[in-house]
Image (cartoon, rainbow, N blue to C red; front, top):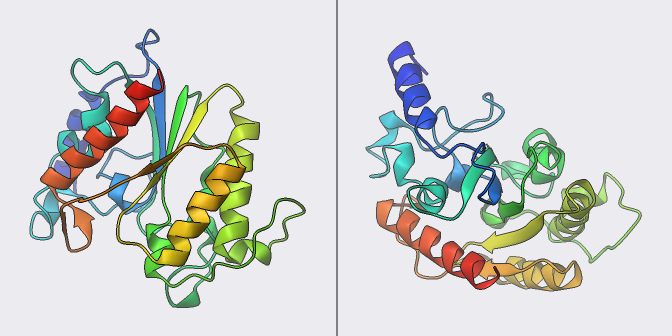
Length: 230
């Protein structure tokens, strides 16, 4: 990121909702590239996909156009806390070309979400695209080897979120058009772990990533579910 981009990102992100509005539920995001924007993720070293310079890939060129900003901006009853998103992140430890993605995995990052009232987990897209193995359903005694498969990793992730943030409400956001075995696994494990599932549909994308229109639709679908559960 050059100096000009850094200043722009800092100023833009300063204008996003602040968690200090303690009368509103604080929303934390644990995500992948769909939830990134230059200068707006924590920790700052996480790789991002959405950037000011990426306008040739997508029409999303401002942080205010992202789904998580739309969800928590303006007169929204929700405010944004920590957005810990990492481009390319898998829930399992298996990434693209079979690489070890444990440093960026959702499991590794689950304890870095601040003090949220609501946790939105938006993942599984890269596990689907990378062809990560699904493995077997496991509910206890997880080994590192098992975490290279999707089902054990997701199970541990949801258990870890409940244990780390016992007062927070955890939701899982599931992208549309993923592998059937990934969809079935998410549905089954969310049901077992008592985590509400928000299944997205008809999300407009470019280069596999949400456009401005797609971001607005994600925000709308997530907002409908959160409002319904109040």
